[in-house]
Image (cartoon, rainbow, N blue to C red; front, side, top):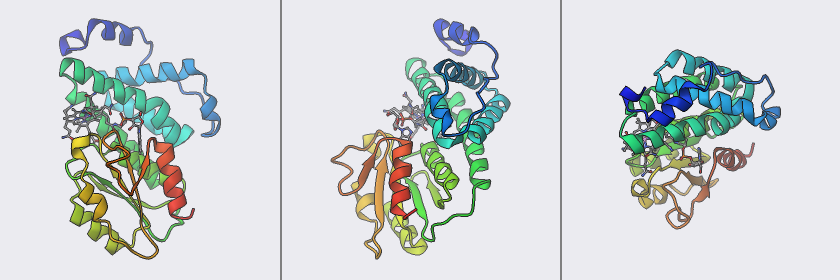
Length: 241
Ligand code: B12
């Protein structure tokens, strides 16, 4: 691992973390909130280890299992957030690990898609649209949001990375969207034009923004949310579910 650019301290920590298959306690999504920290820590270490080893099979199995047993919100917040953050920090410190980020993103996306495929029939007639800011390439939060909403029988359509303002406006009009969510990871990605371009319709389209790129000021008239669960709550309300 050190040959691959992992710091000796991190390599030692990961190597001593135990088996790469994290053992997740079998609890319902609601009970999962009180999962003992020790188990969660072990699961985070195991998944980090699998990511650094580019062990896609273990990552896939771990994630599919976690989404099924604990739901998207718990798995994203307790398991994926720490792993993705540490992968990002490793890149920041060493310049290595874009391969790890890509591999991890593929696995997370695949597992989230399987959640959407197994979701109950949607109860909202007007969909929620999820879009990246015009230069944004990070899409995992959009996919996580789509899957968390799908679990709650809410139909959300992911428009993906780099959505130009006119394209978002056209999609809102065409699909009769009830709400729009825009993700921006960095302030440079934010484009006020994209928010302003969402057409005024009846009933009105709720515009919600999230991600470290947004500030209260740059959000303008849009609602600014700070977590996956907050985004789910606000969008659930927006579609009247
Ligand atoms: C996966 C990943 C990639 C993948 C993306 C694949 C995909 N389809 O999404 C790829 C490989 C393409 C990529 C590319 C790049 N990336 Co990148 N990437 C990441 C990584 C590891 C996870 C991204 C993610 O999903 N974050 C979402 C969650 C997990 O993190 P968060 O936003 O910090 O979470 C906070 C809040 O947003 C909130 N929250 C969490 N989840 C959710 C969900 C919702 C809906 C809401 C509302 C809130 C919320 O809670 C957290 C605590 O406050 C991050 C690390 C990181 N910390 O995010 C880097 C990171 C975002 N990337 C970074 C960089 C620099 C890049 C590159 C420029 C260079 C590179 N590393 O390759 C390129 C080009 C990107 C571009 N031009 O836009 C930097 C950004 C630095 C900055 N200034 O902000 C990060 C932070 C890594 C780092 N520590 O330096 N990346």
